[in-house]
Length: 79
Image (cartoon, rainbow, N blue to C red; front, side, top):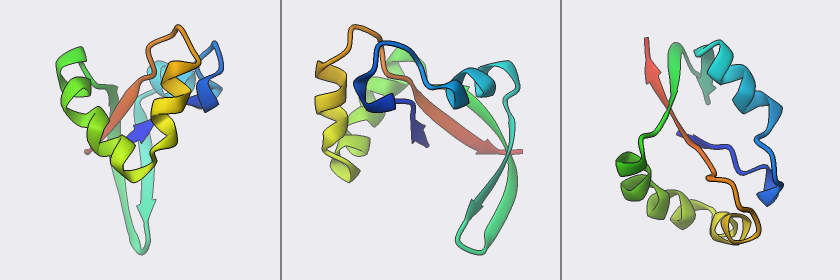
């Protein structure tokens, strides 16, 4: 998962807009490389996933508080 927080700015980051336009991505986590499909978490999924992401990076809550937009959580699923 990745979070399109953009530091709480009023617009989505360009990389998120690119994923929406073309959801096929290549991912590397340490030595593990794989193709994936990106999709925005549904509201129900985000409600469940957001606390986990904030646990990894507490500033996400601050970013969410400073913007009126819904900060997307993006799920990257192996293709």
